[in-house]
Length: 234
Image (cartoon, rainbow, N blue to C red):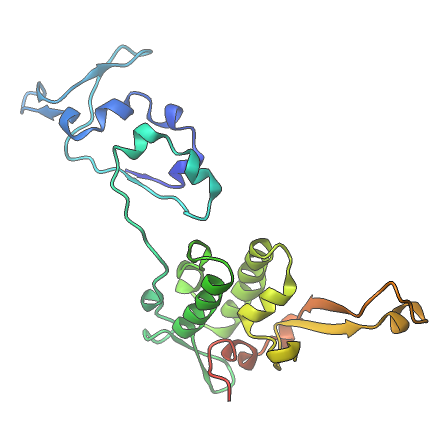
C-alpha cells in the first residue's frame, strides 16, 4: 500500500484502527481455513466486521521534508514506521541517450545530470539541503524544448517561492550574474538598472538605482543559457 503525501492527510481518518493493527506484533496470521492463528483483529465500529492487517502487507508513505506540515505528523504514527531519506539522485536521469545528455537542437549536447547537481549545489549554499530540486523534474526530459518548459514552468516558479521573489538570488542559481552583478550572457533571468532620472525625468535624492528583473522570452532561452549554469567559467 502506497500513501502519497502522508503528512498532509488527517492521520486519524486515514488509519483509524490501523494505528494499532499495523504494529509488527499485532499483524494477523491466518490458517488455510481463514482462522486467526496469531496477531489481532478488531471489530469495525460501523460494519461490525472483524478486521486484521495481514503480516505480508507493506505500507509505504511519502512526504516532502521541505513541507512544514511534516512537523505535525502524529507521534504514534512515527513510532510505527522506519524513515528512509531519499535525496536527489542525478544518476537516474537518462536523458535521450541513456547517459544523462540530450541534444540541444543546434548540434550540441546538454548534460542534465550536471545541470541538476550545479543548481542544487547553489540552492544548498543559499538556502538548505531540504529545498534541493528532485531528479523527477528532469527524469522524462528528452529534448531541449521539454527542458525549457521545465525551466520556465517549474524551476522558476519554485525558486520564486524559495527566495520570496529575491530575483538576484534566482540569478545566482542560474549563474546569470557574476562579480559586481555583471550579467553573464545569455541570461535566463534578465535585469536592467533603472536610474531615477531616466524613469522620473529628473534626479530625485529619495530614490536609488533599481534593478528591474524579468524572465527571458522562451525563444531567448538558448542552449548556451542553460549550459552556462554548470560549465566552468573561463
